[in-house]
Length: 198
Image (cartoon, rainbow, N blue to C red; front, side, top):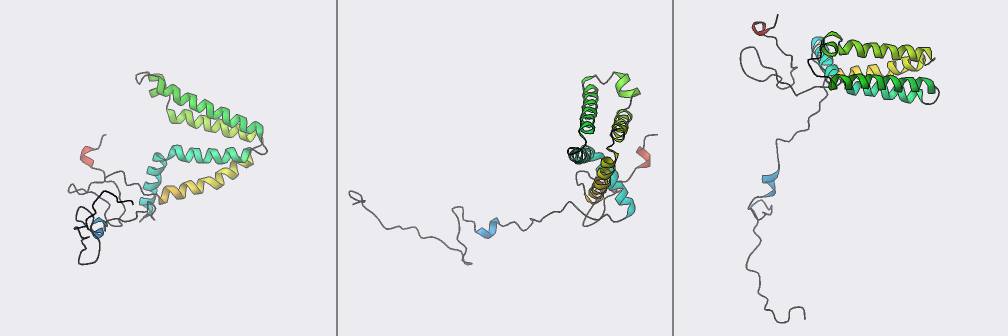
């Protein structure tokens, strides 16, 4: 009943198969053509090859991930202060707000405003804010929480900074334009004395 009024013909197209037995799709390619042998899993963690490479990696990663490391330590300190030290928690939030306002003020002022950008260095002001926050935490009897937080988070931050390999920079060798950091080698940037600024 489903086919009343229509004439059904047998299919003249056979399903082609390859000699290996893998079926082909409509483009004529087999499943083996779509497999990518160059795919490999890349792990961004590795042990540095020398102490110099480890110190270079720490410096680069502390500069690159400074905001994330700071947030990590701040969140752990915030969580440790919640159950017992409400006043210290409020002071921590206030000092965070002050630091945020200072950084927003730096962005809002034009670059030629010398007082904020040249005379008063951002690192000095942020260091003073961190010191004032530490003094406030010690004065409100939350110094033990601060020490425990720093003792727990600083080793984790340093371990991450030592083991994390950043591949977003290219190191040129002294004699040519080949990129550095082949197989399992450590990339160490070279300084060209002829282009160094005195």
